[in-house]
Length: 174
Image 1 (cartoon, rainbow, N blue to C red):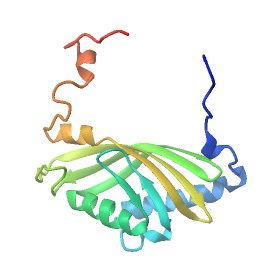
Image 2: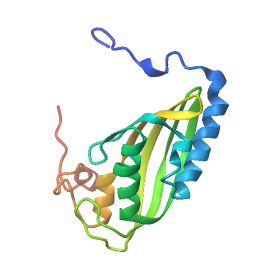
Image 3: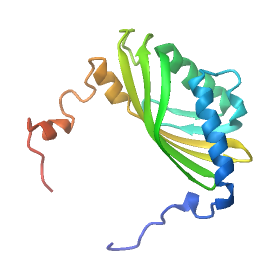
Image 4: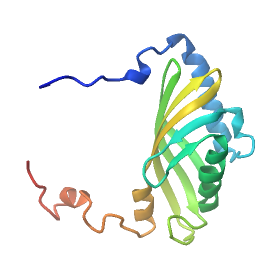
């Protein structure tokens, strides 16, 4: 690399690998709680002041109450019969990560789209930090553009790079 190398992986530099099994227990129980559609008592797994940091469209939630009110409730209002399926999980000390999908029915308003009754797949990635048996940080990426595409809305107005993959457009070169 030309020039100074930026600091890498600062958040995991001092992770305590002896905490891996405890982290695994918290995350596995939390996912079961989400699949049971728990809201009121989800604080069993999350610290009161935890941070939920999502991509654009999802927002950032500061604290358990914002997570419940501004993520869980609207998500469950928009998507019923949802089941979370982690396709892979990784554990390292206080840290865990997963990617997977939620399968659900679009049964309420979502991003301006009225309920369609369609079954959708919602892809995501999660990164969690667990301290003293509670999740304190949750970094999240949810593929809302793909969900909207399943509902007939192209947020990229035909300009998504999938057009290159299909051969509809020629990709630019640097």
